Image: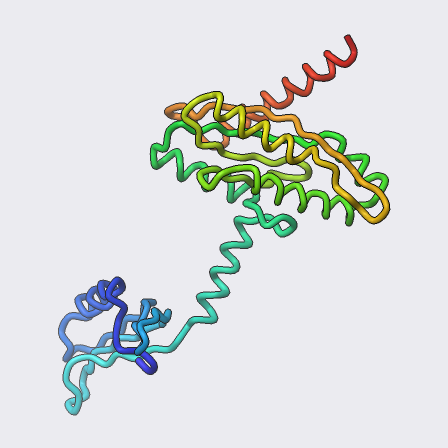
Length: 239
């Protein structure tokens, strides 16, 4: 292929499979597939390759392989895949992306995980007083604060509206509690606006990852614990 030295070492099997499927090079046949081509400087370039047997042409022996660079198409696919799993406003995983990653963790058998559901308190007045543009800015700031408060082994997503969820990798309850407290403290720090500041807080509910649990069940359980905690706070304020 133009600009390349041949199939990437990790992508040689599709070519082998195409040749096997074609069989006798003297019989007409064609196979099209995608694979990476090794460039002259060692870069892997995505290509669409076409392998054709020579068929009835007596002047050519074997197969003819042609192809074209599909880097732009490959990049468009990656962007589409990223957008499908991430929230446009915050850049965090969206609900689908969070569920997908958590499901992957569960299928891989990863243990010592806590799912935490985070609901922002006092956020509605921000939207009511300042408008949705400012509300969106506040959500983006809070997203960055949560990311800064957790570790590389943890991850967070925006589930919807003013709700977030995170997975905390922790081997003991004390560690989990410290991380959740750190997240709540970070969220509650005042956010400076033009001539004023706003402050929101967060209520958190957690669910322990157990064998056989699904991502949806764990998220729903953490959501239920969050509402229990919120109800307990209201009861305490009125008692």
